[in-house]
Length: 322
Ligand code: PMT
Image (cartoon, rainbow, N blue to C red; front, side):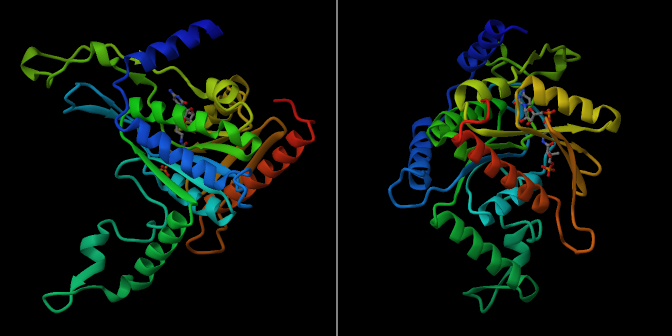
């Protein structure tokens, strides 16, 4: 597809999308967060800022949505990576699907409120003993990250919200130059129903089988990379269930969208290992199997932070092509 056609598709996607609720609030929060962490803040922070996307986007089938198509992602990758980026000194904009896994909450049971707490004496609520350390750790680390200005959490549900927010974030991060990074782990819908052609009310099953035409969601990776934040360090992900096509698809994405790396993963082994595809070759990253509770995001983030450092150095000495 040529550039004019892509831009036309992108414009038509955004024009037909229902306007983002609270978009000015989101912009204000981002402005404050980025100014606070920016190298030019004058307060000596000068942190790198990474936007971590996490969870799957939904595609509503009705405007007053009863049914939707979903993309699989538990949000574990995004939540774990956020923790490691913060540990490495980054400030994180966590763009996540409502209801998916959250940073610092990974070791809590599925229903923390009901499983971790109990009523002590008809009045007070206390933490149940076996969960006490996990709850303390989660509250302490989460609180430190948010109040320390290191973590900004922005939720989405639909593909319309996700892409509108991603664009706002990217444009806000532009001023950070090479200190900005995108880590696009969200599972993004490939097909959607344009808002204007979407049924307003619940689709009736009495009308027989559902015959529906879905449009292709324009891939925004290239415009993100070349227009919205041209200096940012960009990592996208490639998920496949068939290992035979995974690496080829990842290296196509690397070239087609001019990514700095593409993290290739297979659905069944994604928690054990990933392959980081770069123009200089592929790097296998796996979790430390000698340690119980270790995860693959730990060495993955370490590798990417290292590559980002090299990128910043080479861009500031002018030896890297954009
Ligand atoms: O959340 P977990 O359960 O821990 O699982 C993590 C994960 C498997 C979801 C994650 O590691 C992962 O692979 N995420 C990307 C999955 C995906 O949607 O791949 P894709 O081939 O559809 O998209 C590739 C890239 O293009 C992604 O970075 C996506 O953000 C981007 N994209 C996709 C479609 C689209 N229309 N526009 C996009 O920008």
